[in-house]
Length: 360
Image 1 (cartoon, rainbow, N blue to C red):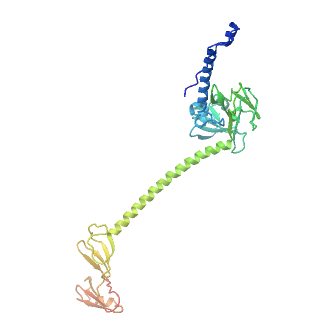
Image 2 (image 1 turned 30 degrees about the vertical axis):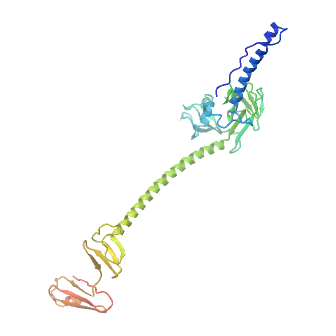
Image 3 (image 1 turned 90 degrees about the vertical axis):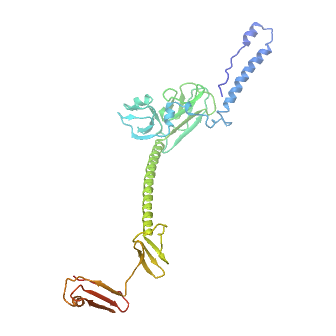
């Protein structure tokens, strides 16, 4: 929507009546002026629809970033960087937040600090925390311009520091954050403007936050960073857990490829359908024995009733082994080839397992 057409009076009625006191004012001239006035008024009303609701409040999205000056944009910037107490001879960047004399400020112009009062008056800092407010409070109110400079009465005692709060009001046809050094002064609850206010209903906005609220905002930013760090650590832990899970699944699969479990007959493939490997095991449920694969056949793991073991021939004394070993219950030991390459036969005539012990 373009700006309304300015009204430019084309006919001077006073001059006409002075020059022609007996003649009526030409109707066509009146119509022309009224038509021009109607055009301008209609365009003003058409534009106003985009700015104002029926209750005189501003339309949503009617104020954009280009309507704010550098200080306001710095104040409303996306991410502030808490820097603690203000320190001289320090390089500060835009959006750095410091605390000094009980107030919090955001840097609106990058600079190396000297004296705070000088830097502040140079426009390097914008106050964002009002020590006059109660802990955690936010102050907001509207006043209506009446064409005078005031003073206007505020609902809160703001002391004598104009930079403890912000005033947003009409200036040259637009709304902007007013300059606390030139546009207004404050004394307690009295706000006085440097020039006549624009007449309107609730067309000036005054707001501020306490130091506690500003600190809470900074703490929230730090907490957000901590949460992001914790999330990164959790993601690393999750990756490690997934790696461990993969290793465990691989180990289980390897075991499953070696011990094939219980089966009724000799398998020809492992549990994954792959060829068998020497050393594979399974339990045969038909014969109730463990079996191992040699690489070509399945053999049983078990004990014979009678077991024979060849021993060393280091001792040539007949009956040496038989004299050293004592048979247990239901076990009979028979020594063969006394004095030579001896063997010992262990016979089991009852429950139990024949065991051979070689002494040498």
